[in-house]
Length: 222
Image (cartoon, rainbow, N blue to C red; front, side, top):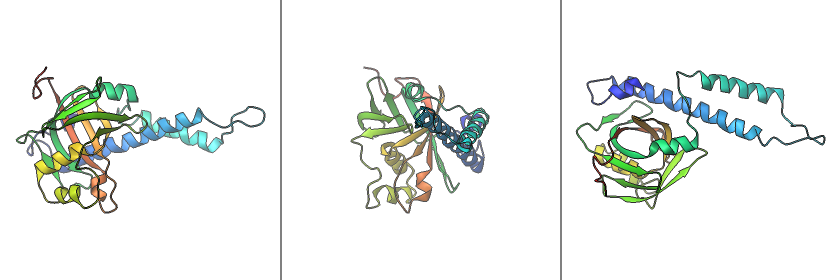
């Protein structure tokens, strides 16, 4: 996290270190989410004829091991869905975007892209003059912008932009793609694009890092 806070332009932090940090957060998120889902599943364990839970020693041990790993992973804590949504509320400026393979890290210190998320009203506004309704899928922490265009449809619309090198175009498209919230706190928001496309390996883990700004910085208060 400290590394990402410093990564405001190309000269501050080595690009590969940025990608490594994002991979680490992504991995920790996946591990912690798996533990959460296993714990939830255990609440619904089937019972035998005597009313005793049917659970194997192996699965119990596996869950315990995963929980131990999740709790000790470099200070990463998976927020519950309610806290995640609460932390999303506010105004955010795009700081950087990167792909999981380390083939590209784009900084937005000289290109203004922002979004305002109102999680009490569940609506959003972006710098590319879009606004609409938010939907949050709690189980996997995925944020959707209902009615947004430019997402995972066929025909290569998103992908032609992603691979054409147009930085602003990528950011505009990614604003509309469902985002998995892998980390959000008072300063930073890290998301992972959810794009279904068989030939888009690197897009699946296309990360965006947003920095919180004071509400009203870009979208004037009503």
